[in-house]
Amino acid sequence: MFERTDVVDEEENLMASFTAERPLAAEQFAAGKALRKKVPRRAHRAFAPAANRPDPVDILEGQNRSRAQKLVPVRYGRMLGSPFAFLRGSASVMAADLAKSPALGSLVYACGDMHVSNFGVFGSAERELIFAINDFDEVFPAPWEWDLKRLAASAAVATRFMGGGRDDADEAVVAAVRAYRKHIARYAAMGHLAVWYGRIDEQAILGSLSQQVRRSAERVIAKARGKGHQHVLQKMTEQIQGEHRIVEDVPLIVRETHTAAGVPIGEALDAMLRSYIESLTFDRRRLLARYRIVDVARKVVGLGSVGTGCWVVLLMGADNDDPLFLQVKEAQGSVLEPYADYHLPFENHGRRVVVGQRLIQGSPDIFLGWGKVHGRHFYVRQLADMKGGVDMVEGNRKGLAAFKEYCGLCGWALALAHAKSGSPALIAGYCGKSETLDDALAAFAQAYADQTERDYEALERARRSGRIEAAVDER
Image (cartoon, rainbow, N blue to C red; front, side):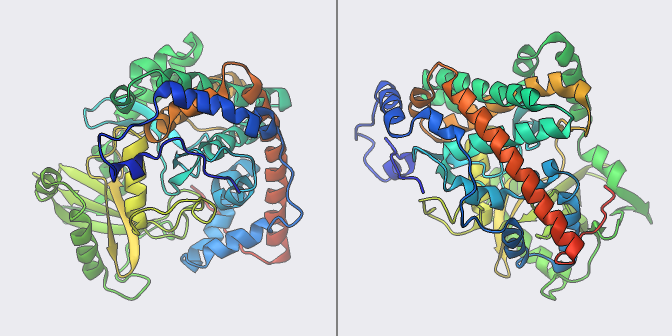
C-alpha cells in the first residue's frame, strides 16, 4: 500500500483561503526529485505475484455478481479472445496487483483502466479532432504510477498479440514511457491555465508521427470525421412506418419492455432522464429540450463493462433527419477505490465518471451528465461524435512500427491527463531526464505480460472445467 506524500492537494485547497500559499513549481519539482531516495526509480522494475495473490477468476466472479447474469458468458467469451483481450477486461485484477507495487503517493485522477485501446480521437465542442483517453468508467484519485504501469503492460501484451518479440515489446513500452516523461516535464514548466487548455489536436497528432505512419493516421482521422449521428442512424436503425427504429441484434442489442428490476422501460427512462437533466447546465438543457425520444434499446459494449446496464436512446430534433444518439451507461464502483487512500465528496459513481472525464480529457462531450434511478448510478454521453481509434490486429507484425509510434502518442495523452489533475512538477522531478524509469517499466511490463498470459490460461482452465461459461461473440 502506498503512503500519501502529496505536496499539494488542490481539492482540499478549494476549502482554504485563496490567499493561502501554495508550493511553487520549482519546490514541487525538487520534492519529486527527493522522492527518488524513498522510492528509487529502479524499484519499479519488479513484479512478482504475492504468495497470497487472489485467484484472478475469483476477482472476476466477484465483479459479475452485480451484473446481468445472462451476459456474463459474453464477457468471458470476449476476454478469452486473447491475453490482450483478457488484460483489457481485467482492470480489477491488475488493480489488486498495482496496490502492492511501489508508488510515491502523489495522486492524480487516474483512468483506472489505462491501456492502449482506451485512446482515440473525438470531436471537441469546437468541432476539432482531439486525441485523448476515451474511457473513464474506473476513474478515481490514485497514484499516477498505476496508470503508467498499466499502460506499459498493455503495450507489451499488445505487441505480443501482434506477433512481436520481447525486443519489440521493450521498444513499445519505452516509446510510451519516454513520451510520458518528456511531456510531463514540458507541462511542469507551463502555467496552470496553459495546461488546462492543452490538447493534442490534429496538427499535433500528425506532427508527432513519421511520414509513413502519418498517412495511416490521416486515414483514421478522415474516417472519424465521417462518424457522427447520421452515420449511426444509417448503421443502427431501420424505418418502420416512417419512423426510425433501432435494429435488434440479440443478445447484443435488445429492445426491452421492462428493466431487470421489473420497472416498465418507459417509466424508468423518464425517471432516468429527469435525474440526468438536473446535472446539465441551463444552456444544455435548452438544447436537449428541442429533441424528442424516438426509441431506446439495451446495448452490450466493451469488455470490462459487459453485464452492466447500457442503453442507447435515439432522439430526433428538427425533423426525422436530425438524430441525436445518447448512450446511458451504468456506473459501478471504480476498481481502484478499494485500494486508493481517498474519499470523494460525492457518492454517485456516474458523477465520479463525469468529473473525471471533464477534468482530464480537456474537451468533453457537451451532453455529458449523470443521474440516479432506482438506486442505480449512471452517466450519459453522445454515442458517436467524430470518434475514431486504432485497432490492434492479431499477428500483424507489419503494423508494429506504427504501433510503437502510437504508444508514444498514448504516453503523451496520459501525461496531459495527469498534468491537468495532479502535480506535473512533482511527477517530472521524480521521472527525471534519464532513461532509468523507461528501462524499469519495460522490465515491469514484460513481467506483467507473462502474468497476464498465466491469468488468461487460468480463465481458460476455468472454462474447460465448467467453472465458468463462455459464449462465442461475433462482433
